[in-house]
Structure formats: structure tokens, C-alpha cells
Length: 373
Ligand SMILES: *Cc1c(COP(=O)(O)O)cnc(C)c1O
Image: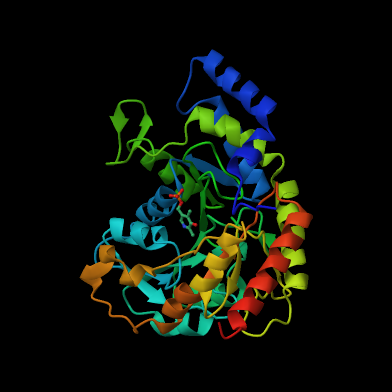
């Protein structure tokens, strides 16, 4: 039995008839950018996120960037980001001209450590980006009071967390504004790029609507120097189809994670995800940790099991951030995590039998690795 890391084709073919109907509707409408499809999807996604406003944008990176821009964050400002995240979180800050200030995670959750967060705040700090990594929310109940005390904005990077909950509240309205990605592999994925901002701040929503469309409220009249970062009608129509089964899809991810949690428990040297009682993750990724990660990934590949490393190099050690001057060893938790994590197959079309097979194979591979040749 081969188990791919993620079967995107199967995921989308499950909706083939409805996606084709949505395509026909857009084709026949003759209207392809910022129309009724985007407005409909925004209304539905806002409701899903229990949020007053959703604004469709071109991708997840732009969603974070536009929030920061709308808050007026720029040169001379600092924004706190996790040391272990996808580089987009950092790039959004850099593209505003501000400096990303990394904070190391809690090893139990891989998310921002509130204690370290407080220590990283300076007079230049303007905002905190809390990433809900792998689909489990950051500890917002601990982060928000620290932010409020210092007058900082809290931005959720919810690119991996559509539908995740924290103390019962859904991602997208846990802070001041939230950024979502609809990259094809995310829990809610388009057939191309897409993103959204959600917020309960009407003024912020209005500003992002303007910024995403050349800084224009009325066509050809430009109030500010904006951008072209719009979710297009076709992707909005396709996303609206897939939004209808997002909860079902997330439930299947939870069932797979439950199999992994049970079948992989108690293996020496293998670290499984830990879920605090206030968190309801949506398992964008199921990430394990092992000192012999690369050998394990290779053995699994030979056994027909697809895995991916999220992510092999932390942002501060990427050539893209050479200018910040970080050296290996400066953010040791992020570096150790990046050396040891491995994402197992996970997705809404995967079966529980496949999950059991992955777990059994992984056990066998680890037993073999443990043997001296
Ligand atoms: C995917 C992702 C992004 C960026 O989204 P894109 O749509 O690819 O631009 C940002 N942050 C995190 C944590 C992500 O996983």
C-alpha cells in the first residue's frame, strides 16, 4: 500500500461536478475580477470565521502584508514573529520595511512562547504575529494580555488553521486581524493562489479593501498608493464550493490524527504532537520529531510512504535573511526543530486504514533504525 503525503487531485476531484458548475457560472458571467463571487465567498468565509469582515486577497503572504500596511507599520518598527515558521510570516514584515524579531517557541506546541514573547518587546515593537502552526492555535489567552499591556496589535497567521479553535473561539477572530492562505495544499485550498483577511475592525477592513485594489475606492480615483492583490472571481467561486465541506474535511483530519496519536504512542525517541485541553487543532500537518529524521524519512519513502519536512531551514538561516546577520546556534530551539521534524501523510481523502498502515510502517522503520546495522 502506497500512501502519498497529500493527494490534491483526489481532494479536488471529490468536488468535480460542483467545481465545474462554478467554473461555468463564472465563465458565463463575463465578470472575472471583484464581483459577486468574491462578495459571496467573503460573506460565507466571514461567517465561518465568526468574523464581521472578510476581504479576499491574492495569497496568504499578501494577507499578512496588507494587515501590517493598513496598520501603518513600516521602517523603524519591529514586529514579533515565531523563530520557527514558514518564511512568509517574516517576509510580510520585511516587505513593509519593518524588522522581524524572532521569538522561540514552546517545544510542546511549536507555537510562540508567551514568556519569551514578553521579553522580546521593545519601544519599537508595534505588533505580534501569532502563527497557528500545523493547524493548532497559539496560546492566545496568554498572548493577548501581554499585547494589550504594551498596546500592540495581534495578527493571527492562520494560513494553516482554517477552523481551528482556541478556548472554543475559532481562528480568524482571536486577535485584531487574521491572515489566511488558500494555497492548494491548505485545509481550504483553491485551484491556484488565494488568501483572505478577517477582522472585526471595520476601518481596517475598509483600508484593506482599498489597498488590495490600487488604493482605489472608486475606479480610477486613487486615495493611497495601493497594490494589486485581489482574490479573483474564479478562485472565489471554487473556494465557496470547498468551504461547504471544510468542517467535514477537518473532521477526517482529526480522525487520522487520533489514529496516529494512538498507534504511535510510547515509542522511545519519537515525539508526537501535544494538544492542550483548550486547543482544537485542524491538523493541517501531523508533525513528529525524531533525532534520525532523515534516515526515517528515507526508510518510509522506500516503504511507499510520502513525508515532507516543514521546514528544513529556519528563516533566520536562509540566505534571504543574511542581512540580519544571524549565526547558527542563535535560535537553538528553531534550529533543533527544523533538524528533527517530519510531517506524515494527512488529508481529507486519506482513509483510517491508510493511517494505520503508515503508523505500522513507521514503527517497523524505527525498530530497524534502532538495530546496529
Ligand atoms: C502558506 C503559508 C503562508 C503563505 O501563504 P501563501 O498563500 O502561500 O502566500 C503564510 N504563513 C504560513 C504559516 C503558511 O503556512
